[in-house]
Structure formats: structure tokens, C-alpha cells
Image (cartoon, rainbow, N blue to C red; front, side):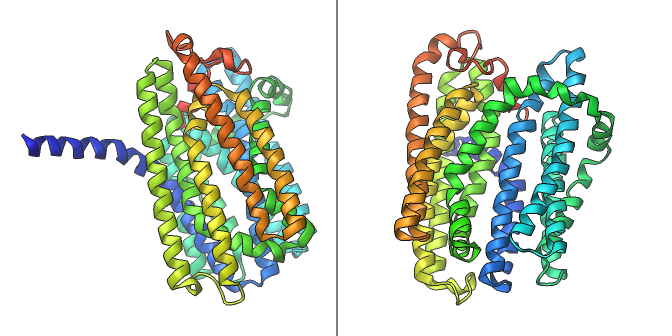
Length: 447
């Protein structure tokens, strides 16, 4: 009897934990290989060149976040809730706007490369990579929206394998070429499924039909993405702008140590949002609370593992990762601050995913606006007073404000949800920018 009970507990634990492992596999493989690429460039490039490379990667990640807000977030709603006559028009608008936007983004990235004094060739290669990366990001969301999860996973794996091959075969000073090859190869798994839809739905005449989507969905999402980015990476823009890329290099180098927990947070958020949405739609609030707790426990375990691995590396073998011209003391302090920032983020990540699943977009955007202002002011003040490394504490302050606001909003939501969720209606009273009836479809389809 005892053995059977123990076996049952182990089986239930495996059932709960295994989906988290599967959800993180593709994104983790992508992040690990990009980490290896950054690590190699850390040793092969001087501080100025590595700072440029890191800054461009940060802006490329930002562009993917913007794409999520502008095009990826509305896509599941269009696919699942629009009637046939409206769906085709909206799909054409999304496909056309995202394709045209990718070309415009490529031009902007070329200009950024020129501003950072890259060679014309390097700036051009990175610009093409950034444009293809945005095409891949939209294709990935289109696959999720049509329940072609394996295609999205295959794209992640193809991206990762190509980067590993590039690290083994490409010249040491060719990071942008490796990224471009990975972005192109990673589009192959989408095949005819995506590209036939892209070409069929491309029409410049459809662009005006994007504006209703913007007013209803994308505007609030974009506000949240931009202000969240300002909270999270204000140091990157301020330090690089005022002190140069060389001053940003040690901050970026120390941030490599927390990249694993960041990847896990993002991957599990994508996994948990749909589960929250289904639970809210069904009115099963106890199950949502249980998922919230399990989500947090998994994140805490990931944070502890990342912290222990970083401590062991910096204590016993820092030069395995970081070259001699980086100060071990400076890197250790930077890594400790980054881990504190990650700890605050993980304390609000489950609540943020829950509120997104409930359709509470406007309060989330407002929380992001306030915290970004706090972060920018704090980073700027610390940068001007104490220098680049202490300015990281400004991000910690901004993230703390963000976490407190989201926890307050979550408590408010739980207080009202008993009335609002009956019948699966969602939390419409708290966000009139998008109905809670649409919110589950907006998120659930990605899992």
C-alpha cells in the first residue's frame, strides 16, 4: 500500500513536471547555442567589438518582443474568434504588415550597425539576419496558432544545430554570418505550410485593415513590451550611449550567467498562459492557484540551480568562461546583481502570465509604464553618480516596483474573480481593451 502510494506520487510529480521540461526544450537549445556563440566572441573579440555584438543582440531580442506585440499577440484571436468573412481580411493585414515591417526593420538595423561603426558588410549581414529572425518569429507564432507545435520546435532545433555547426566550421570572426545562416535554415521546417500562406495573404491593399487590430489589441501590447524592455535593459541603452560599447561589455559578460533562468522564465510563461486561460475560462480558480504555485516552485528551482552553477564557476574556474582582461571582482559583483534582478522577476512572472491569460492587459501595461520610469531614472542617477556597474541596481529597483504592482493587481483580480468568472466569462471589468472571452484564445493556442 505504501509503495503504491509512493509510486502514485512519483507518477503525479512526473506528470506535472514533464510538460515543463518539454516546453523549455526548444527555447533552451536556442539560448544555449547563442550563449556558446557569445562565449566564443567574448574570447575572440576585443571589448569594443564584443560590446557592439552584444548590443546588437539585445536590440534584436527587443525587435522580437515588439513583433510579438504588433503581430503575434493578435494572431490567435484572428484565427480562432473572427468569422470567416473578417478572418481573411485580418490575416492578410497581419501577414502583409509583418512582412513589410521586417523589411523596414532590416533597414533600421543596417543604420544601427553603421552608427556603431561596423563595416558595411557586417552591418548588412546583421540587418538581413534581423529581418529573417522577425519572419521566423511570426512563422513560429503562426505554427502555434494552427497547432503545428512540432514545426516550431523543429525550427528551434534547426537554429541551434546551425549555430553549433557555425562555431565548429566558420571563421572565428564571423558571428553575424553564423546568425544569418541559422535564421535562414530555421525557416525550412515551416515549409509550404507557412510560405504558401505568406504569399497568398500578401497584399499592400490590406495594410489599412491592420489599424483596427492595432486599436483593439496591439497598442496595449506594444506599450507593455516597450516599457518592460525599458525596465529590463535601460542600462544597455544608457551605458552604451553615454560611456560607449566598451563600458557595456563587462555588464553584458556578467549577464551571461543568468541567461539560463531568463530562457526558462520565457519558455514556461508561453507554456503556462494557455493552461491559465483554460482554467479561468472553466471557472476553476483552485486549479489556477495550484498552477500558480507549481509555476513559481519550478522557477525557484531553476533560479537556485543557475545561482549555484554561477557561484561554482566564479569561485573555482572563472577563466574557463571569461578572458583575463575582464576583472573577476567586477564580473562577480555584476553577476550577483543580475541574480538579484532575476529573483525579483521570477516572483512576478507567474502572476503576469495569469493576468495575461485573464485578459488584464491595460493594468499590466500601466504597471510596466510606472516601473520603466522608475528604472530609467534610477539607472540614470546611479550611472551619473557611481558608474556603469552600480547602475544595474536601478534595474532591480524598477523590477521591484513592477513586481509589487503586479502582485497588487493579482490580489485584486482574485477578489473579483468569484463573480466575474462564473460561466467562464473572465475578468472583463478590469480591462476593457480586450474581452476576457478573447484572452484565453489569445494565449492558449501557443502551447
